[in-house]
Length: 180
Image 1 (cartoon, rainbow, N blue to C red):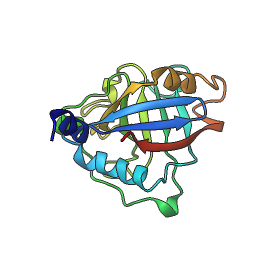
Image 2 (image 1 turned 90 degrees about the vertical axis):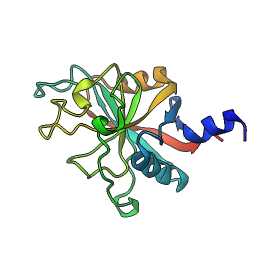
Image 3 (image 1 turned 45 degrees about the vertical axis):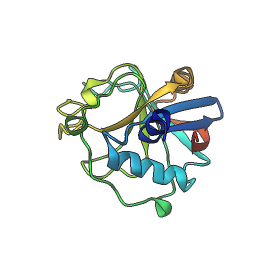
Image 4 (image 1 turned 120 degrees about the horizontal axis):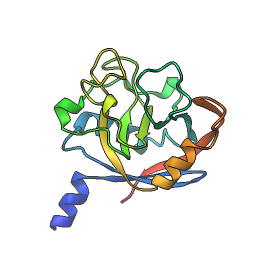
């Protein structure tokens, strides 16, 4: 096996095909194995097909939040088709950080992440372990990064500047596939 094949296996790439263009993400199973396996289970089951990016957080649409972030959130899979929630792999455990382009799992409380994910716009240290965005201080499970298509991420974030965080119509995710 060539060294290229080993690298390709260690860091799979997925293509998020949206109606506004493609976003390519590189995943880190060697650092966040549970989170990557969970995301790929949804990808391989084609459950992200025809889902959407449904939320965009900008500096101006979170007036009640003292800690502001910038992300787009997607992956709204029908609740009847969702897999069980996974344990939270904190950034303290993985060594990853919420930098510009990081892909991470959304959650409401520790160990509640299922299918919804988000992509950071600019560095978001308040989403890391010990960050102040959530009162529990556990942060979110970063598991990869955008390697191309940040222009699409930013276009989605700025699409509906006056609608608030949740927008209609949502931006369709046509499919998410492994780049084999």
